[in-house]
Length: 459
Ligand SMILES: Cc1ncc(COP(=O)(O)O)c(C=O)c1O
Image (tube, rainbow, N blue to C red):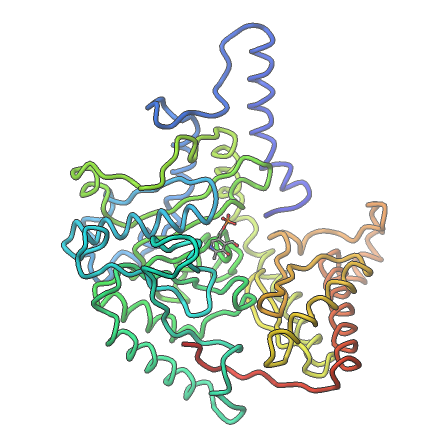
């Protein structure tokens, strides 16, 4: 999530805790607990600090997020809760389960066999059966797909369609879908900015708002899955969650938001979870808890301590995310032209990506293999998404402040560093070169054909 000294700063407190524990154990003295068996009811150390650091970022804590459909705003302040999990897939599963249970308690159905038994997932999305279906790992039982805007649609758009006309068409498709499924869906999962399934594409904001509002009006509970775009990566206004941002305007419509294991800084102790806007009292009174809530979920003192520092550091990096966004965006625009339309790029904050401009998924996947080969040769890493046929760029949030170093990690000196624009510019230049060479390879292998992908709707 961070790099250099900042990363060291957020990781150090957990290491010091561990060193203190080891020193105490060596002396035969009581040691601070490094993790807790959460079902044993023992106090989890460092939990309170983590919750204090997380709370102000939640969508319903924003001035524009307190009043949404289905919540008056007055009664939610002390009724929100968090279910801590170990990693993202469990957090998504817990989110579906908890929101379904709340639907059931409110008479809306869910697991108890009522009318609202389905989980809605984007037609193209991370949320396949394996991560959020209650019906088993290999079937989509319990799920229904909603239409999503995409560059990877069948040829239903075209170069002639203006953004306004496309957005109106996408909203109409959502209305049609809600008309057919609005009464049978309990929970709708959405990614406020796409991850791997759409290579970091941001939603047209008006379509995202239309979906969230329409779902809420039908009585569906909306969960924003921010495991990919959260923790400030989206860059929208500098906050932790995209769905808290005034830019998207969905804060009042979100019933739950998931967060992923970047919180733990990648040091090994994993921590993820879901915050739910309302329902602590109702679930408590009914004696219910998350179906999947295992004994070591959120149990690591080290992870909670690191997560607290990761969150506390975020406000200090928002200007760096903004600077990084400019650098990455400029380079990816250049890539689009240097590859003569071979790569179509998009993104915001420090979550960007590109798709190879070809309708055929196997051709796109081939282009990603070529891209990977050139990246390996040129010494740059990129998030390769063969399945989608594209790549994602997800640098550390503070990458824009990293100076240029030589191959041995030695500083290149200020003059050189200034001229080259630092490590992020250098990495982006290498990525551009790798991607242009991959496009050239594809020209040789399949001919210089470009599909000039256009926005369409995947059902
Ligand atoms: C949107 C989204 N949700 C959930 C997950 C699952 O996270 P994890 O790999 O920690 O289980 C991912 C992982 O990439 C993701 O992109």
